[in-house]
Every structure is written in C-alpha cells, then in structure tokens.
Image 1 (spheres, rainbow, N blue to C red):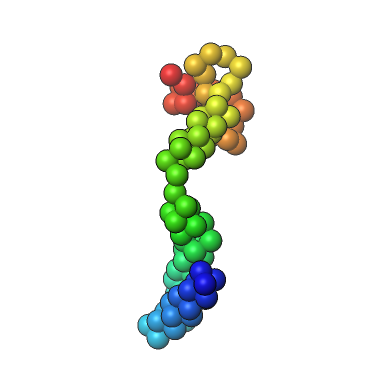
Image 2: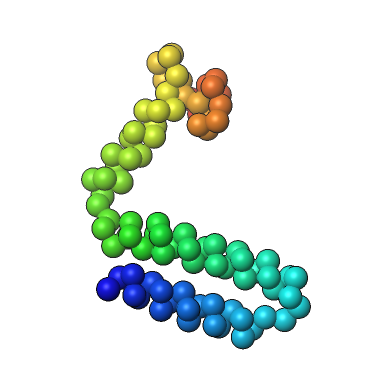
Length: 91
C-alpha cells in the first residue's frame, strides 16, 4: 500500500514539474534537483518520520559522537573525513 502511494505521488510530481518547465537546460537542472530531493524524502525521510523513535535518534547521535572521539580525552575530530582533532571539535 505504501509503495502504491509513493509511485502515485512520484507520477503526480513528475507531471506537475513537466507542466511548469520553461527553458529546458535550466529547468532540467531544477527538475533533477527536485526529483533528487523527492527521492530522498520518499526513501529516507518518510520511513524515518513514520517509524520515529526518540530513543533510536539519541542512540545514533551518541554513536556518532563516540565515533568522532580521538585517543585523547575530550578530543574529537571535526568531521568523519579527518583523522586529527581540531579546536572546533574538542571540548
């Protein structure tokens, strides 16, 4: 049932976007961005909102913060892509 709703919503969105398209190259970018955002909502946002659990959200945040900690106490990386602590990420 949810799958049918999602497919119908996608079809309606695509229809409305195609109706409002002007210059193709610029509108194609907007269309692709809109489609990408809609896809993220359908595949990630809606299921997460529908099955929301504060406990799971809090646990995922704590896991992320723990994963950012370095070997030194109260020292954290600024982003997952960095390996060293920064003043911005440490307490």
